[in-house]
Length: 413
Ligand SMILES: Nc1ncnc2c1ncn2[C@@H]1O[C@H](COP(=O)(O)OP(=O)(O)O)[C@@H](O)[C@H]1O
Ligand SMILES: [Mg+2]
Image 1 (cartoon, rainbow, N blue to C red):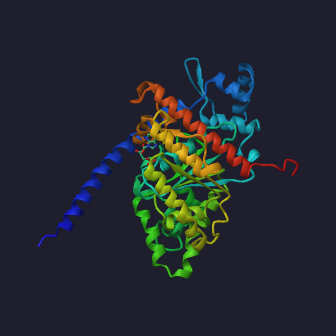
Image 2: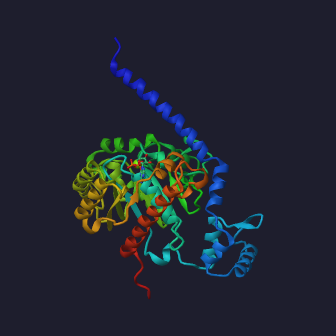
Image 3: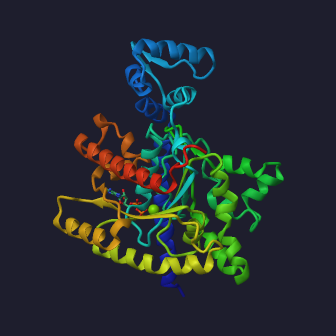
């Protein structure tokens, strides 16, 4: 006798393979080397732009650039007719050489920010990746930034573009976190002589923003939660520290800002992400159901963190609720925003990320709104500008707020 239940499986498999085909096609496009180069050029500065960033005149910049090339600090920039293209790599190398301010001059430590909320589709992943890109592109702090994708279901928003490997060679955060708990890919690499740092470096995906890297996720990462529940209770706290100990603590030695994107759950993965974090950002879209789910998340998650995580939540020094996907011309959204501000009080960010189709387009193309080319985008230039401005405002407020908690204050030390 046939079981209807088996038909469910068949349909599920059909959906998955259709999804995979779409995803592969989109990734191939996003990771195409021409696309990548086009994006690198798009984020490049012209001679006059670099001069103004460095605070020198154009002639002085010619001298500096020649000297930097002589000293091997930068490679000769590309020139197209009369226009020079200084890529982000050039810009950062020049700024480092001239000892211009960077993260470590302003902040006491590298900061790990977990992005978490209970509801899927609220804009967590979009916020995480856009916040990361906006921070990385901020020349006043220039954080070396890495996004750790810790949501097995949501790895759709990654923007890594130079990947040449297929998924079979992908090493995820969960592969690294589970290295002492399974005979998996990490163990296999150790067997071939790789060190812990090697394995982490293999997992990193570069992007067209030179100081922004990604540690990807795959659906198989779901086993993290299964393994947790199979452990005897006394072993569980140590397990929840694995993401921190095996990956995040090591990333902190090489990056200034580590952003962990989590899944829409109150589960061991979410607790492990919070255990690894110094700061927690809860994005919420101004819908009644989303805000209710956020309420549930905020009422329950501290209980789990305090009772199950080895640091019992003492590691979290900063927390904010950030409204995202907001439409300020919409009365319903305006009313909800007011409630969010009232109820979250000083824990609410006042800047929001606006709802515009630019985010949908960016998501579909595996890029950020900073990368959309106005002349061949489906979205209008105005929508792209609104998207970019709102992300910048949101990121700026977070940057300032993080400075209030983690900023350098003992200037004499
Ligand atoms: N500000 C925004 N404006 C328009 N669409 C958005 C915005 N933020 C997110 N989206 C869209 O909403 C959907 C869910 O976003 P996502 O970031 O993946 O949410 P989550 O990670 O919380 O599940 C995606 O299709 C995304 O493109
Ligand atoms: Mg997500």
